[in-house]
Image 1 (cartoon, rainbow, N blue to C red):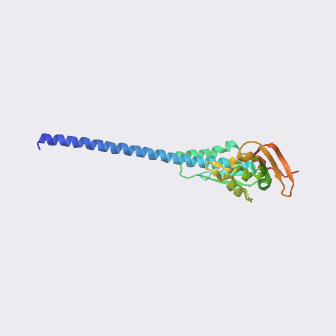
Image 2 (image 1 turned 120 degrees about the horizontal axis):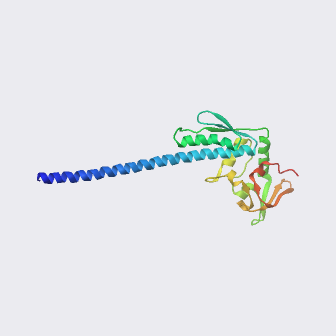
Length: 222
């Protein structure tokens, strides 16, 4: 092979190697970019879940006249009593997304003077309130009507949280389901009664819906 032919062959090989290396580099950059985007997405999802949990816990604390204590990732403790206090949780969320921390803070309920009374009301209402099902021509409990997990009596706010935070389907908690209680798991009106269990009943609504706040009231009063 002549020197000229060898030179041309070397040039061709170099060109092939260049494109191969360039392709490998581009592929590597794309994979790195995809990895970074996935990591950020995962962090955003975890941060969103943490923030959403805080919002649900805050709502529950309001329902039962309790307080929500939030300890951020730095160990600073705050009481979440108003909507504006949620910015403390948002700050933790933003720092996690930005990669400034790899951990979240924590939540803790502090029961108030009337918390147990409100929990008792919830227990009683979930047991005794029933909605008329026109299709089956009978009354059904709230859990049956809304097609959520069977209710068993809760003893404290943490057990109540476990029940209400349980997801009926992904992204929809029992708390969200119970925001509006209506006919056959819809937001349509129905006849709603308080069944005392001894053959007596009290009509709560002739043709309407109930909200989750109603479940923390004493509906047994005649």
